[in-house]
Length: 257
Image (tube, rainbow, N blue to C red):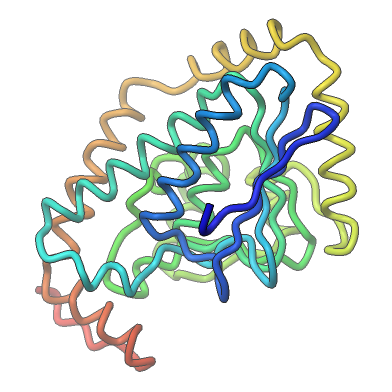
């Protein structure tokens, strides 16, 4: 693995995103994660999965520089669909997946975390979907999952302002389950994972299947529409301006075209 480290003990698999400096979610990271999940799913010695980031961040977002190599809206929509399908697989995965978030989970990083069954956070972590700052929109089902956790109005505020919330606020809003001092996050995440690992894998798998019935057909329609609009927004003048401004470290000048 080039971007991920993983191992397991005590029936808990630990997957660490290790792509300095910000653990950006390139297509390579997503493909490696899919490959790891293949191995984890077939290993009966693993009952729970814990995902976290190496270094300063959980994941600070998608790989914006990789976006500049994509030339068409259709290709961009396909990248969106790939990430959506992966995170949907995670939410339906027969073994619980827990995200332990420190530093920042932004953009694609937060969408990855929302694809997990639940989230534990450092109290000073930053969580947000800042894509509109770049003239883009979330593309890995973030527009559909965020309202399920925080409500439509808070999701609208987070999207429209691009302002992140803290780990403590994430717990208050329902986006995360528990917040801890950063130095105690992984210890508590392991404690939680080991407690769950003692449960019957048969009943856990059934519970996960049943929890997914709470997602309506409208959710799936919204995810499909998100991928379509993700591609359309990317090829707009504003989308190109936002990406250029990000790379050039300047304020974007959006024209509405």
